[in-house]
Length: 432
Image (cartoon, rainbow, N blue to C red; front, side, top):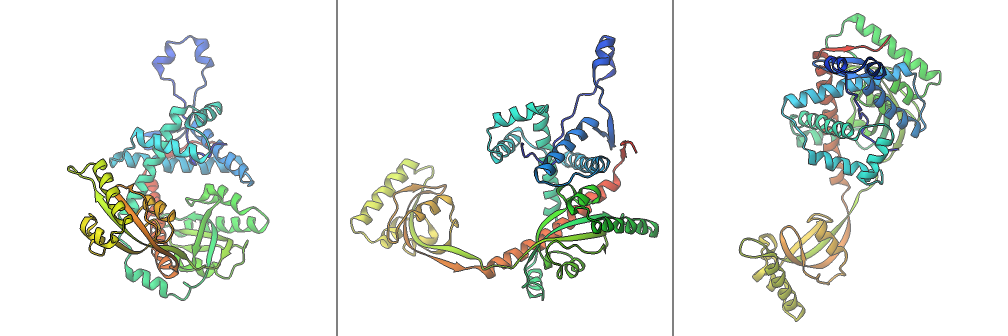
């Protein structure tokens, strides 16, 4: 099975009146007329699009060994996901977001590689399933446009301050472990009336009762949840207690693996959260190199071949007994390290790129590399040593900053999508 993006639509061409009139009556009767299942502003979603999307979801659920929800609930959930995707594409186009054919080609190639196939092999699999490859590519492009729209929303947020990170690190719960959680959410509109709140509370309590009666949590999320993770079985992933709202943290911190909360109210709606797994924080170790190098840059006056020849001569001088530091001071084009005799100090692996890392990893301590090329020019490098260092504090700080950013991004994207949905004209035409 090809692991495609979650929503990949194959749309059938609708017959226009003039085209139908020119065909024989028998031909008209033989054509399968696609129906419209939703109007989304000036666009439509076809029954064929919905059926194709549902097939992909069903394949994934079965591959993961999950339980399929009732067909009518699955149709409703997938259609809502299609509506949100359609609105994102419309907004992306309105704000000037475009995706080139080359970018689509790159995404298709990456998707094929993820499945261990060539692009041609993946195309054959897709077409053997009855899908049109051109439509497949079009939908990849729409997925990319929707993702860029969300990235633009996140980019508009204020940067995370050091003060926010310090406050999070100083919190009592920061030293705890991490929870893998899943989520069922029923949303409330802004300015919800008491009747709307009461109705939603009754529905979340009914879902909770079904869980108590043995319903699978992932199946319940797929069937009823209105969160972005609904069709993934509600799975949110790993979070520490500081990366979720305080009411959620208080509710899950005493749960064991497999347990779920009672319904929780938030400004966005009602929630049930399940703890799938728990892990303690571990120490983070990193490898550091100590090295010195000599760089000869390439430019309009120095060709790559000239630079290569010069580096070869320099290396031979050092092999013949010249002092590396003195040669570096006289010849290296790296202004940062040249005055230090080429000394780069201690730095983490890959800090200077993959090529430098490859060369250093192949050298013994005290050994000088053969000349090699990078984007900066031609080099030789000497391995002065390596060590393992504890970077847990720095890693925790990075994780804290990313945790704050991720939490804010999720809230902002959810707010943006809900507002866009509420403001749009959407008419669903699924049968009752």
